[in-house]
Image (cartoon, rainbow, N blue to C red; front, side, top):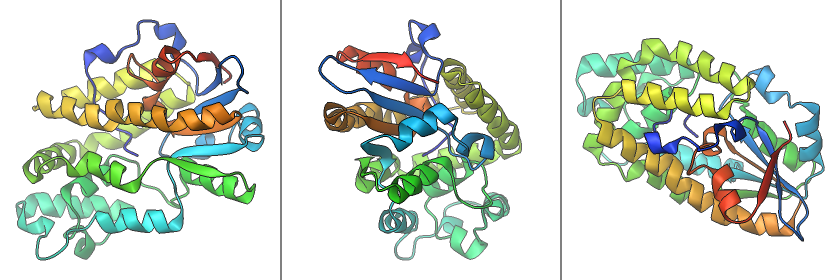
Length: 284
């Protein structure tokens, strides 16, 4: 769900030439081909207007799997979990200058100050780590809606509880450290988002990962926390999502869409799938 990801140097794939492409065909003897598609949190028409080959594979799929079931009820639960319960509030945890900076930044996301002070630190980090949207119709949501319109069965590779646990497992102090570092980088974020879009549109997964790794390590003074963040938000989730998608792969003709940064690297889904005996080939 967060574009700005961290990493460690062992993440780079041994064969970087195999790490370029957004749509991959997944094959294994005896199974009908399935497809893995890398997404980005964006409503940019260059992203959401699927290339014909991607659109064709999507429309012909027997199932569509996303990171999360994006039904309205699920999204409501996610939104609710972002807020403190009880007397706790963000403005009581940080100084006024930092809080004022956050309120100003969150205004770009149409979130008023009265709501900002009720947000948990991780919720602010997650919000500021994605580009502001005008419609909210990001690629993953559009894929979910299109699948619903086409009456293609949809599945979530994770539960809400599992996704939220990625953030909630960090202590409040750790969340506040990451929040302060995120705010310190706010002036750089537009350029960061532009670069991520550029690399995504070039379909260069290795470059996308390398840029994200370099940015995250250069923007934090706490490398141990950065590495822990990456492990939880990428590595651990890759294994879980791989386990969940196997049922769909066994059924065949599945279309699976996850954040593009889950694909590359030694511990990325492309390598993990190959390790389980699947053959992968670039379609787009």
